[in-house]
Length: 129
Image 1 (tube, rainbow, N blue to C red):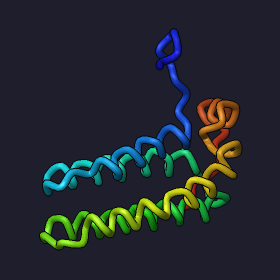
Image 2: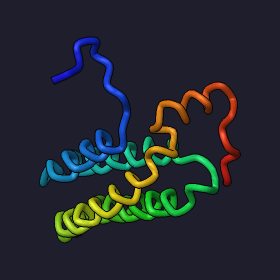
Image 3: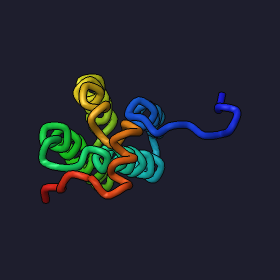
């Protein structure tokens, strides 16, 4: 159920819950599977943008690796490979360790309301390219 005012804080858990649902629900037809993979990649991007700066290099690298693997799975779906369900299931099995890695740093990231407030007020650390 939604909170009474309809607001819900953005969290790693909430975004990764979306990822889990989408990868579990990935349909057998090609178009729906590609749409679900695109949605998962978008969620990973939302997480990535809240880990700014070089101090989060390990977390960003892990997110980028997960995204690259999903891009490869999407390419396999487009080419009609038969093993995409297995590849997506294997990717999903690696999600819990990624969630733990990200969760350990959530309090220092822009998921933390105080850190986010400081960033909005102009005190965001420089982001490495």
